[in-house]
Image 1 (cartoon, helix red, strand yellow):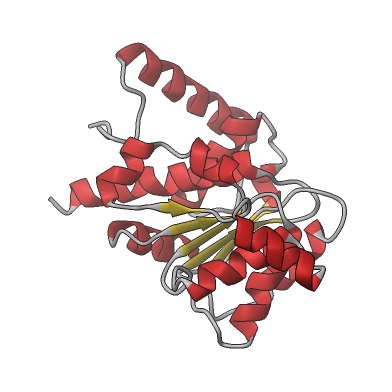
Image 2 (cartoon, rainbow, N blue to C red):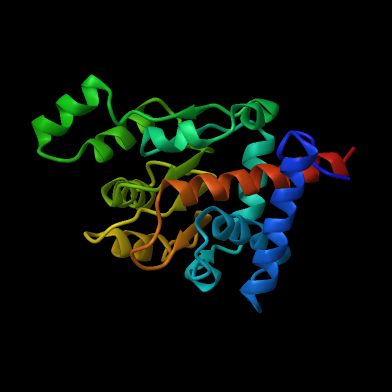
Length: 222
């Protein structure tokens, strides 16, 4: 039985999506992921047509379970950029009562970044922390390495305890490094893409995979 909320709305759309996933499964070849982890990776490959994510994507052992629990409880998602919030399906989020947040363009965030000569991304994460959105929430970073480095700093200083950090910033300055330091954390679940690759599209794909898994889990539980 298909998921109702987290799949395409028409038979034709569902068939195309299922055929695409079948092609990904066939062409990706062997992988080292669990069944649930592969649902995340295959959707990332589906979104990018890049099979290197089979291998580049890494999971904290508790990442998927923590993400599913957070979604089922309607935990907030805090993104580094608006693109992630726009890319996520509102009906799928509404099904679980999940609300997305991003503060990158807020006037107070911009002003504070100028005052401290830091980045908007850093100040946006600090604002989210002040609003108590990060404890128990999902942090989704696809663009700004400085946002991810700030999240790591806050975790290491005991300031926040998110349910899951999806760290996939793309770029050349501190992108790979920020993901590497996140992956050294054992106390907080994470999903990362090693190296320079990443981006908001991949974060959206990963979250949509988690939403689909959460719906399947919900249906199985009756």
